[in-house]
Image 1 (cartoon, helix red, strand yellow):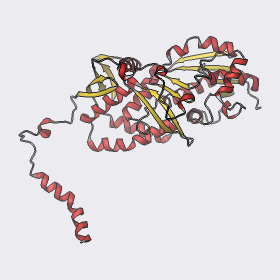
Image 2 (cartoon, rainbow, N blue to C red; image 1 turned 60 degrees about the vertical axis):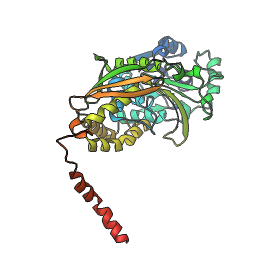
Image 3 (cartoon, rainbow, N blue to C red; image 1 turned 30 degrees about the horizontal axis):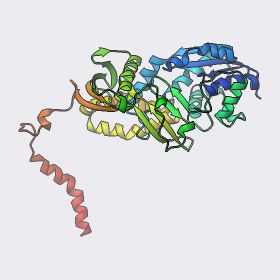
Image 4 (cartoon, rainbow, N blue to C red; image 1 turned 45 degrees about the vertical axis):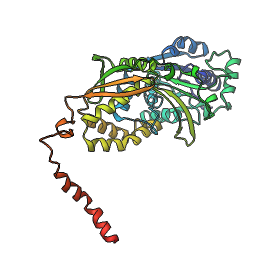
Length: 399
């Protein structure tokens, strides 16, 4: 083993990182500092510092990053309409660069020799963490236990945890993996690996099933300023509070569940079940806001970039040169995306029912089917003939 004196471990208190903390001390005979980023896990953080110390950590950092996460990461994804493969709103993916950034900062503060994470050698997170580490600290030493140790399954980790008296919130009967933050909760592995199995209703933590949602619809209004959510029902809130508030409203009305099979960066397909109530609402509202405030060609150009932005986030290239360029483009494209959107939430549905803006490009006088004095319908004939010219020439040549 390479001589390591001090490691900063990205620690969640779950099965993997609890075992890793103990394993690092055994294998490297080093000091381990546990670092947990509070990005909205809520009760999962309760007692985490005591648990880390009990498991062998010399020091614990629990950093409140919720506002930064919401403001600089989640709201960017909303502004960019970033959705991976048409369904995944990137809740886990977009948290990783922030978590890893702060981990590098703590490693510098502590003069640590290395950083470590609990990502498996099969998943996307190992890439997201390590691309961030290297982008911010090019010569950093990274320890990825899943790529080093002899354990081959989470069942073996459970046995190890039990042998060493490590309390972990997982069992062999319910071995699926979860990741929770302000934006979403994900469920993977275990009983979900059979793509034909419907998820157990008792699994879900933040949303009710559409069948159990209220019979009366809930109306809400969301205000935007240059693409950024600013207020709900006229009340201004911080980014974190906006998402938290919408999570509760959406969850009560069965909004935000998705069950997908996605393509991981490392090459395999993986089934994931997600609850993303608040940001499902924000995505729908934001798109509606754009529909009356964004120029057509700017919108179409931006839409062509959605797969690329989502892919960069999913793959872990948040701190890449290309993402920096796309962020600047997104901010410019969102100028003027300002106004209010009204939505109706009903039994899992998120329905747009109104939108208004002082910067609206929608003008009733031009769009009306009634009599108007601003649009000369006869002009459309020449417009069509000019656009048809190349088609007519091609048809003539074919004859």
